[in-house]
Length: 317
Length: 308
Image 1 (cartoon, chains in turn green, blue):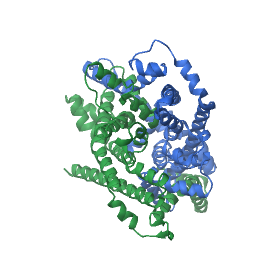
Image 2 (tube, rainbow over the protein chains, first blue to last red; image 1 turned 30 degrees about the vertical axis):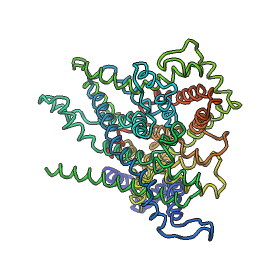
Image 3 (cartoon, rainbow over the protein chains, first blue to last red; image 1 turned 90 degrees about the vertical axis):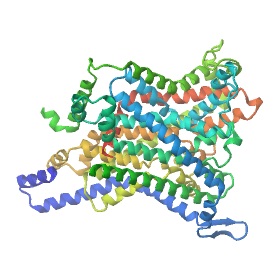
Image 4 (cartoon, rainbow over the protein chains, first blue to last red; image 1 turned 30 degrees about the horizontal axis):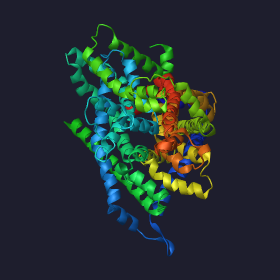
């Protein structure tokens, strides 16, 4: 609006005919395309082309007799009945249902607590919670792997010192929980920072009134702050969904410490990696990766739709 | 409102927010002891593993097994361990460290530059196909990057790019979330009137982007840079599949390989101290970068999160 007004006054002031304005329009269009071009080229080359290629690969199969042949959806049919793939997806589903809510509730609680201004040494605490995000997943897994381990892990040391039998945190029963803990440790701080930043940019006027009316901190957090940062919360949910389905580094590295508990198909990504690079079954791996991408997109989409519908319902109410 | 605030409304807004926030924190508003204690207890959970890492990197292999994890051994072995880390296998750790800095640095600068230019264009120009292209990029945020790794590997292999630095850098240049963040940031940080004024002064569109756009987007650009830096620095899957020569590894792949060797058997036991101390060293640069640049996380993310 203001730019249109400005350009009109500019044209009037300088006395130039509209032709000049058309030229400027054209210049702007050229500039816009030139500015997005570098990104779009890399985007096409590194994202769209591989994605399409992955799709193409998944329709073929390399056989000992006959070489690479078109098999239609046969790889997908195999995948949806493959217990290893389904087991991995199920495990990630469980991960999603348990770990993501725990992580995000903690992140939200920390963000609200720090934003309320009632915590002493808030800066130090914020940094302490955020710092694991700087630790690569590889190092985080090594670190926790040793801490869990029975060789010189402090958890075992403490429990044994108390005269109790230490649980094997890397056994097949407990390893999923142990991985959930590693991922939570890594990403609570990251999500907290996103939510905290959103909280900081809520205009205080929004809840000054509530405060005057005598509403408590919990009440303000629940009825003013959380609704105000709903887009940021949704962002963290979507990112967490994408992240958890893609789990790879943690199980891949823990495999060295607990080969039997992890196996080759703990997560779909680990399975696709083993299929492609150990078994050399590229086509089936592509189908698995593609299917995983589809699952992620569907779940993210459902979550987004649900959130939108809820917002609309609340808006109507 | 002063004139400087009119010229730069975003800065004005931030000032106002800061002021509001300070008001929120003014003394007299009671601090909660219970909440503070609870938060310290939680902070402990995040710090304890790192404390263990620091203490353990001062221990020799034998002391690792024979002493309590949360206290120092009799011998202070940190400097020996550091020397071991850097001399192991002919000093390959140096190479890994340099590779990591190089991959992460180049990728982050590239990703931030591409995202800044595209985000600015999407925010400040109306052009045919603009909205459609942006929606396509936004949709790509949901494409799992690891699902792309296998086909990318095959494509790179046929172009003879595997096992080169480019194999790690090129895929890391694409940051759809960065474009989204830059678009939101540019929309709120660069007033249209400023661009219009520059046009009247006869500045070319590129000149305007360089001298007005980039300057006002700087904090947002740093945020995107940091995201890309952390993502590449911490990436494991991509270099793992792309690189096969130890000399090209980044720290993540190198350390993972050492860990495998350390766990392989009794004879390789002395590696534990090297792996632990190496992990400790590899964490230091990013932690320092975080401490220095932490305010940028907030400025950049505040815009992205709120308007999302």
